[in-house]
Structure formats: C-alpha cells, structure tokens
Amino acid sequence: CIRDSIQSVQEQAWDSIALDFMLRNVSPEEFAATRTALDDRFVNLATGLLRMSFHSLVLRTPHGIVLVDTCVGNHKERPLIQQWHQQAFPYLERLTQLELAPADIDYVCCTHFHADHVGWNTRLENGTWVPTFPNARYLFAEPEVRYWEQVHQDNPEHIFTQSWNDSILPVIEAQQADIVNPEHEVVTGVQLRPAFGHSPGNVVIDVSSGADKAVLSGDVLHHPVQIERPDWNSAFDQDPAKAQATRQALLAEVADGQTHLIGAHFAGPSALLVTETGGRFSYRA
View 1 (tube, one colour):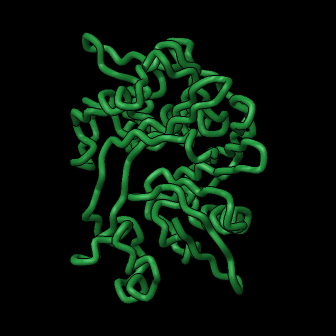
View 2: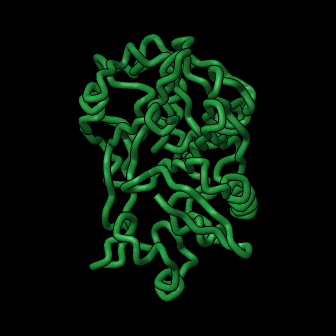
View 3: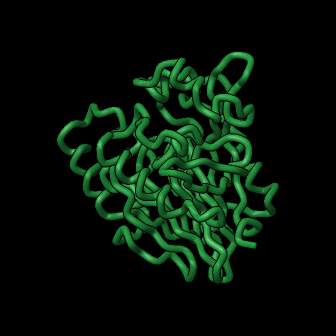
C-alpha cells in the first residue's frame, strides 16, 4: 500500500488557531455549519479553534528517499510569528525515530518557498547556514525560484526575504539545488505538478505505485474544511482567485474515493479520501 511508504515527521502541532487567522473572510456561523466543525481531529470542539500540524513527509521509494517540505526550522529569525521565531524543535530526533539520519535523504522537495516549508533545508553550524541534508539534491520549481529571487532583489525587507537568505540561498550556493521544471519527475512514481495560486510557483506532488495513488497537496488546502468549502481561501494565498480555481480542480481530480489526499498542515490523519456528490465534496480518513 502506497500509504505505508509515506511517513510524517512532525515539527509542531497547533491546537488553538483562531478562525480569522487562517480563514479571514469566514464567519463563525458559516464555519459552524460545516461537517468539519464537528470533527475533533481538526477542530477543538470545546473552543471552536482549529487544529493544524507542521510536518514533513518522507517517501520511501525503490529509487531513493524523498523528503517533502521542511517546516520552520531551528534558530530562524521569524519575529512576526512567535511559534516560528528562534525555535529549538526536536525535528532531527524525530527523523531518527524513523531510523533515518539527515545523510540518508536523497531528495528534498519544497512545494513552495513560504517560511514554514523551507526551514529545515538548512541548519546553523558555527554561525553559518549549511544544508541539513548533506547528500540530497534539493529540487526547486523554477517559477518559484525566479519569483522569490526577484522579490529578494526588489524588496529586501519583504516578509519572506529572510527565509530566502537563510533557507534557500545557502542551498544554491552549496551547489545542492536543482532548479527544475514544475512538472519534473523526481524518481519513478514521484512527480511534481504545477498548482499555482497559493504562491506563484506552487506545486503538488503525485505519488503512484500501480493503481495506488496519493497527492501531496502542500498548501493548496490548509485545513480539511476547505474540502467542503473550496471557495474559502486561506489568508496566506497570494493569488486568491487562482488558488481557489486550483483547489477546486485538484479536489475534482482526487474525488474518486481512492486517491489519498495528504495535506501539509492536516492534523490527526493527514491522509484523507475525497468523494463528490451533487457537486459537493466530502472526506473520510
């Protein structure tokens, strides 16, 4: 089963996220009308606050070990979000619980370059940022690289310029980065695919083994409630209209009740199965 070859490495769990932090244009009454609002895996039923997870996904394939999205990272300067700022997460210790060391990772894929998806690309060593995974090729989609490269040049004070400096540029300078087409095949059965909107070069990752399939959806969906309500954008979608269209198309594609939809921030069971009835989507774990 493809599900058994995909494991997660959790960096942190958030169990008390205000609705308007993530879904700013959604009222409490609208949210309460959803099925997800009654699912204690994804919502704290006592408080009505959202549950989310920050984790990497590890794909064990016959052709190499792939690590997808690298969370926030340690010792990173992220003053705007306290839970990201100058942290000391036991992330690498949790990686060892999967019987993996950083040197065992063959490929690192970042679905996009927001700060909570690139942090463990690097670690601080004697005051210098160095690649965390010394033997890995880091695969970066070219549209995402070119966009943030330009932002860095045009606006050095941009909110994500710091993560470019400490989590992307050191990998490029170490010559471990491969800047690839957003439809790049990582290894047999693992394929990048454009899913623009949340960020300009955002990708999802298709994983397949025979008829068994999964889609690692990154931040196309932040929370399972967006399966029910794909018209609800995250506050962090850079192009809301495009993000909504991408989300709708992805859900229509995976709504076969068999493809595992695996979100970058889904708490609890991060792999969900999606079905569609009468133009509306629903999920089950």
